[in-house]
Length: 513
Image (cartoon, rainbow, N blue to C red; front, side, top):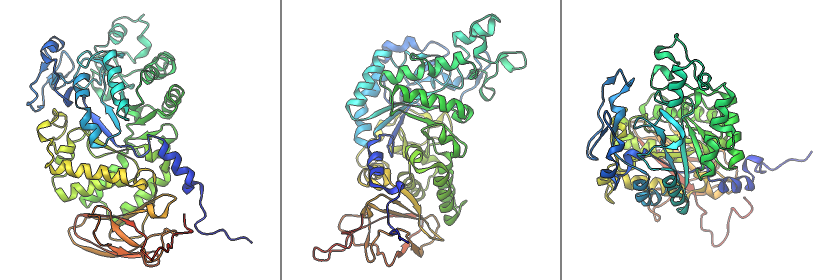
């Protein structure tokens, strides 16, 4: 009988696997999310005022969004008609910030023609909202983004349209309309049509209608394919958990036919599981719940470790590396408002940047913007906070640098480290010295614990270095036969990496990959 060596590479840790992952821009990306209307003040504001007729209101950049009142005739809330005037040109003028921050993917909330400020009520998916510019302005933005080595992902709201959409108004008024079967229309529905979660301004599309599917993604000139052909690199799909497995599979296939390496990432609030058999990636709400539950004390560290292990096993590491890890966005209170404690917020952000996936930075959170639920979390970008002495900005830059410097954090596998009172896990590649070990103490007391790292390639007596500490800092601990003893102060995270012990030119790693 032939015994295979314990560290024999499998498909999951074969060197070629990690090379291929690195070549795919979707893996371990850093995503920067922007609401075009709120990101940068337009230099053409006076010339654009006619684009915001009453009851729309053009606000001053210094104003904070406020909750509005329901407008029964328009069937929406007045806060949806408050605008700040940002556009593609002003966004382009601030791309230096996004690039210098270290983001490599720009994600835009909806840009298609729509009535409201958020644009989730499309009038025509194939047209650009004039407040932002036109198709030529979009092409200029694409060219600028790509010239900086970045990718552009758009927001696809293909579950519903807006009540003011001409095709919906025609379908609602005329039983013989060619658009009638594009919607679910009838007296059984409030407002005359089935609407997303009851919001009458958002009539749902009939996705079972072949003509709707052809328009959205199947035809060569469909919404999905035409924007990809114009330079977009992917789509984030709104309310993807309501679209169904077959629909998502067909849409993803069509996108890949148009652009092979395009990214289709779904807003899947459900457990990722089998959804990742139909789509490239998810917005990882389940991972977010584990992280926030750990930070709040609702989930014990050992349980959090098992949950993460189960999540990776069920979802698969490949799609998880492409999935977005977000703590805040346009639907969720900003992270500084969610987690006022500096230490716990930094703990959560470190997990966001060390767990498998693509961290999503919501514009302004990198400078410490605050804001509760919608509309407070959608305030105009605070450019006055963009200072080199801003601690939130310095911390964000440090996290991004960590991802850029550590290959294992971008494309590495995940493995739980055996621990009871700490959350502990390992990110690793085919190269032993690229291993990263993350240890988290969310409690209010110092914890000292001996943990076991089940990595057969880590050599005994290897020093473990805190990669967030200064380069000349001493080792935190040493590996002793796969074990190490660590002591973590309250509400802190250690990010460790092995180093070769200097032995006069001799290396214990000489025959270990």
